[in-house]
Amino acid sequence: MKRGIFNRYVNFVCEGIGISRDSLFSKNKEEKISSARFLLYSICHQRPMTIIQILDLMSENGYDTNRNSIEYGLEKMSKETDKDVLNFIKECISYD
Image (cartoon, rainbow, N blue to C red; front, top):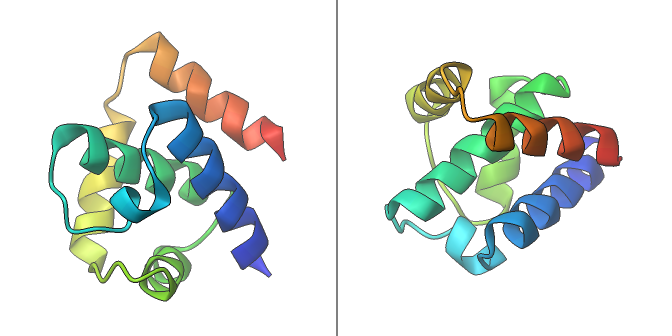
């Protein structure tokens, strides 16, 4: 059920950040790519999706991660103060 929503969020994040799906789901640790993943985690978690659902959906797309990495990304995004980033998240959640 959450797969369709997840895919819309992935497309929104990739278009907004200017990266490809392949880059998002690669093991690339460039700041731009990892920040995009953190954004995706945050958006999904606010949906709300559980961490387990996020893990499963990331894995379905070829990106194997763990609970700690997702929690780290969520924690990092919870401290975000950049208004553009916060508005991007709101826009994505209201997009669907």
